[in-house]
Image (cartoon, rainbow, N blue to C red):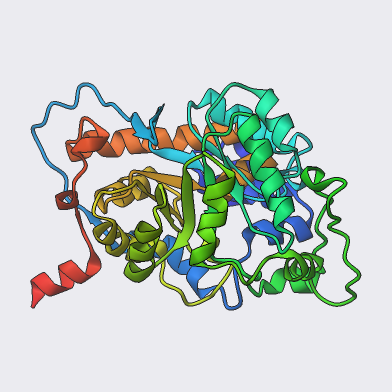
Length: 370
């Protein structure tokens, strides 16, 4: 029934783009984007945990004008909805990350370009005028990572997003079954090849195991600080303890993320640990949120728990696969429209009016019944 409804007209919500993407993509590529680690428990929980948070709207508030705009690291964006770093966009659409970047520019939001982009840093930078951040993995050959950082800085990227939860890739069983093959990445042309002699399982997993620097640790943040003047955010924080360490080493922002549930299964849903990290940071740096956002109400709930903005990953790729640049724009527009409606009906004229008192978690509801 859902498929028939989608085929009869335009998608009416973000979730409907997923089915369109499944129909558009080869099974190997759809499974790569869709899948999580091992039993995919955390993958389900990232989405389901939002449903356990209830909204507490306020009435008789002047909501004749709603302002969704916010400021992230000094950059004003149209809404607290950013594009998360996701790899290999040319597997979803021939224009790849260039199409995604143009959609981000048209939506007046920030795109975080993946380190594993199929378009080069330079191609994306020249495609449109927009604020972009650059995601970084640290390779065993740090000179390669340093070169990418320098290229990003030269081409006008405004921050480095250091992904810290992937000393190795998680066990993604769909990729193993499909023998997922990593495409050649133009950013690394002449530096390193993604071709790996590996007869069993995922070529991508073998490539990552051979290149990612599993020795990278807190003290090595000094190396990154020494090679760039850009602000550094770390992506992959899930605990109070790591948030405190991040503050001690002087990061410029934190992204609460479990890597889209693609790394370690049975970690908590990110929405369940967001408040713990926010309290540890104490407002010293921005806390952004990543994981499971499918509705404007999800954005609202994350903001109520202290996030300054959310990052959206899979829905953007599904929009790209289904309808290219237009599909990405529609995904962002849908989330913005739903957030605006949620704010209106909750009595919040602006993003800063969204407070912790506008939501109640499942634990709080159960406690109130005792």
